Amino acid sequence: MTEVGEKRFRAILIAGPTASGKSALALALARRLGGRVVNADSMQVYRELRVLTARPSEQEVASAPHLLYGHIGVDEPYSVGGWLSDVEAVLAQARADGVVPILVGGTGLYFKALTEGLGEVPEIPQAVRSLWRGRATAMPAEELHGCLAERDSAMAHRLNPSDAQRVVRALEVIDGTGRSLAEWQQEKTSPLLGADETLRLVLAPDRAWLHARINQRFEAMVEMGGLEEAVRVAGLEFDRSLPAWKAIGVRPLSEAARGTRTLEDAIERSKTDTRRYAKRQETFFRNQMGDWERVDPLALEAAAESIADDWDAA
Image (cartoon, rainbow, N blue to C red; front, side, top):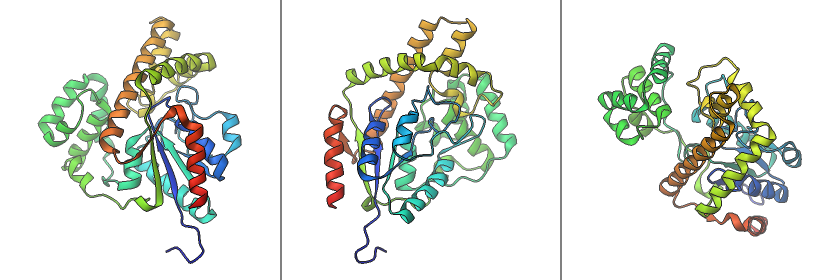
């Protein structure tokens, strides 16, 4: 409970598709408010993937505290549950220190779990995990989805047949617990942040503008060492069913380095994958986070100033 005269704890949540400028807005607010930038992007958690996930630069990190970036190895299993546990500690420290946490990222599931709670699923036996991850490497995604449809029609109906990662997760759960993931998701934990504790923002860019940004940014990533980073990650020994291996650009660029595709083709493929990913993000934000305030990325400076002024006055 807030004592008389004590400032109410609040957090700023900034979601948006990749390359939309959300990190720039978060940094501007952190500088203005003395806040801490907290990662809510499922790929920027990986230590070995700085360039290809567009993690904040060393200069940006030096200008404001940045937390939960690059703290996980690509060989470590990590999920929304792991992030929720990590961010709970970050929020507790922010409360204790009286500072504003500014959570920013493109992973809608992280924000949903943060503000609505997470269905707790028991630990899946390693044998079950290995079984389905092995099959995922040998079977087409659509065939895996067919297996799920036979075992768990409710989850199969929810998931895109091409989303192999989530299909495999649903298969692991039904096989390892005997219950549908849909059932487990109904038994949610309490949200870490209530609606009255948050300012919720989604960047809503023009599609053509965003595509141009995506293309330019990926070319810049290659110039900044993205090819070399992909080669290093590809050279590591870790389970290829883990999420880090699916980071955009890793496989095409490593194939280009091996000579199995041209660098030009690898770059174009990665741009296309990024645009498709952005479209999926926008669909999620539209369908699952429709009540969040929309922000125009072309007016970030004015938005940051207005938000900071309102925040100081609250």
